[in-house]
Amino acid sequence: MDIRDHNERRIALRWDDTVVGEYRAELRVEVENRRGMIAVIATRINSMGVNIEKISTDDKDYQFTYVNLEMMVQGRVHLARIMKRLRTINHVRKVTRVKN
Image (cartoon, rainbow, N blue to C red):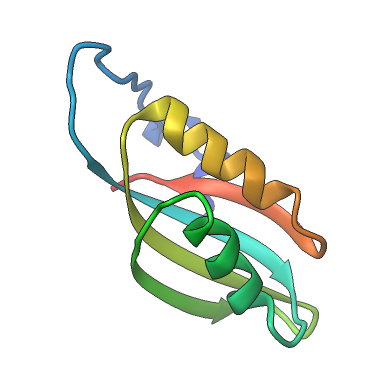
């Protein structure tokens, strides 16, 4: 089920600006099926000083794969920077946040 097709199931969220610490965030990255893409994604995230807690893949079809990443972030701005950086990788089609 794609949550974008079910607006009645979506909830508006926002980060509290006064809270500090790290928070678990999960991203889903849709990439072309190419050799080494997981390594490229992991290297890009690591270069931002972010540790990947968990990583898995799901085949979408013969051409694309989903890379699911669970990591600790310092807030919404930090998460937005990570997502923006991942979108700059060649062969990355889409980056979305998965609600925890």
